[in-house]
Amino acid sequence: MINFEEELKKFKPSLEVEEAEDAIYDRDLTDMTDIMQEILKEARQQR
Image (cartoon, rainbow, N blue to C red; front, side, top):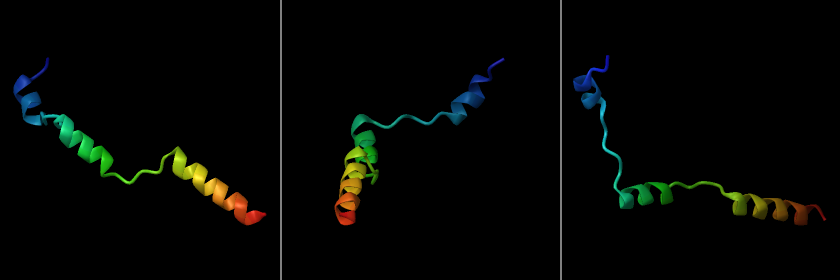
């Protein structure tokens, strides 16, 4: 059976929308555009 008291102790509220946006945008992630730019740069250097 579920012990609701224990589950409530584990609960962590989710981020608000603005906080979530900040957390996402502050991460420095490589996206497809970055990858394509690197591939084109390498291809030009090999010519």
